[in-house]
Length: 177
Image (cartoon, rainbow, N blue to C red; front, side):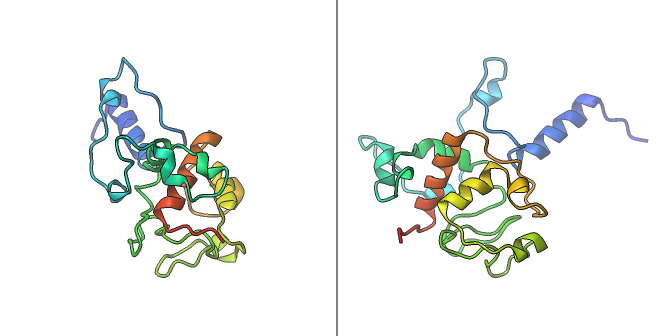
């Protein structure tokens, strides 16, 4: 029989939960944990996103979006999307992961990404993705559509949801109707 110290099991559980966001919003770096204080430098598909120039406020990137998304914080949206990127991609033609690729999500019927195996709950749902629907979904996916397979607990802070939705709008080819 193999013996695992409780701390090792606890650490493994934390790593597993953090892959899907762990059901909580990102925490602020703490002085007690220097690992949290390091800057994220890994490359991902979202790192090719349009970056604000040094002298250009990030908000200008959202200038074409409707209110209230025009006033969102780009950096906050990008940071919040890191909770999503282990399961979703944003690039046009991007692959499906644990969750479907989100390019072109707005204006699309729920459960219609080719090649993705949706849960019966999603397949039976009947709505079109709008920023407002995504806001409701991200508040609590389990409560919004019981029976769906998304294990993510949600984004609790409204300002984080606003920012991540604006970020997704920008990165997935959103066009105002």
